[in-house]
Length: 204
Image (tube, rainbow, N blue to C red; front, side, top):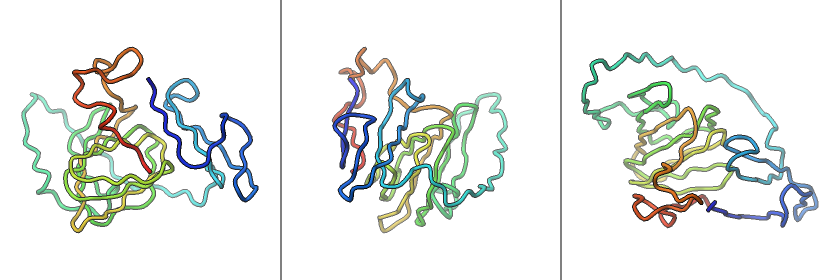
């Protein structure tokens, strides 16, 4: 059972010529998990989404990870870590392998526009309040929220609370989705799932 949400001015049929109230045509953009053959979102823009204003390198030192052998239980005291300058560039890597990179960041400065082209990001809000702006709209988040940011989606974190925003971030090399054992064959959450459709909310 796929979830469908429609916001704003969208045409009745997909992939058709669509004009805005000012008479100009909207540019259509398809954001898909696997191109045209998987779950996707269809967006309409007043301006071309492929237009570029600047391309800038991100200077980030490589993660110097060492194998945890023998496997040892660890207590990660994230509140003791230094605060970052922004919510993307200021992340402190904690654990990593070929599939995920788990990091912590605490910042009152928010951040600039960012896009992860490799995979989805799952952020757990440990403290503070913020607004996540993206091409899908604005999403207000607070302590205890899990936020999934799809791969390839340009977004920006803005801190809205009095204190810093603390995020526990899992950056995946693929997509984040509910485990199949919690879903019916048609995609509905089953009764033993730890969360269900009414727990989910999207941007406004």
